[in-house]
Image (cartoon, rainbow, N blue to C red; front, side, top):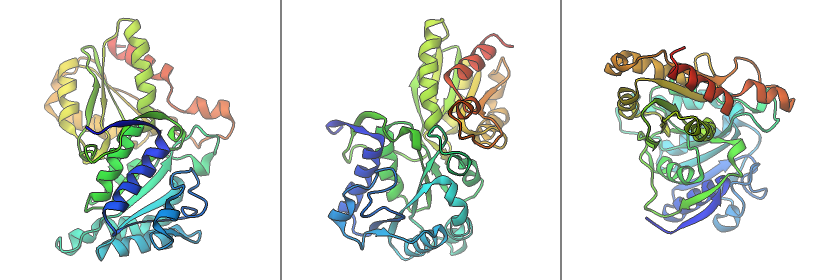
Length: 331
């Protein structure tokens, strides 16, 4: 392991991009305000000074053009990183991602690779209201050919982004807006290249399994600490990658505890938590369950701008604890 340094989440993202751009001249960054301004969330400060405007490219406000250019560049050997800023804006880029980047390798018999990363600042909690607060992860888990990763802390943000940049497939990289200022120890070295498709058990336990990722995972960590004081021993799984999903780590944990709570930040209906539940039900792990599975997610409503209402529709430590206690008590 390399020497660890304390970084903010946004700094870990920047260092991952810088380290890969220094190693490979085919890597470049493109997006709105990524150059002189340093990124809307401060994730690209100073990069244009080091790499110049040909590798840190400020664009017009056209997500369709940005994603189209990046997909085309990736198909001919470049390795673009797209800063989509708010994930809500990815709706305008869907054609390039879903109809071009995702199926191209398949349609051309593997002769063309599409190594492009779409960085998406997602989630509520910043008072940005309905058009700037969505977490649209499940849309992309539905499309074959795309990988979807979701770090929950600065160290994983670094390791997963470096892995995503090196991957030869299009990757949707989720970065929670509310986490940009989060601080943590980061191994900013070549030793910290995450394995896409591999989750991790952050805390071992025997009473119930919590599966989560990204922004919601931090809530789960706090809930688990409080539950431990109440005598509930939770096993906490951070899947880190939605697609490809590390099913084994989930199934093995469920077999061990016999209970499951899935927690995520996106809307509950058709959220990726439902896919995890379905896979558990279809597996041999289902026979080990001795209580109904619970999901904790955002309410099926547009995100309010008022802070108290915004908080009310999101997952919380209290809601996670309530779900766990219901499962443990089989209610």
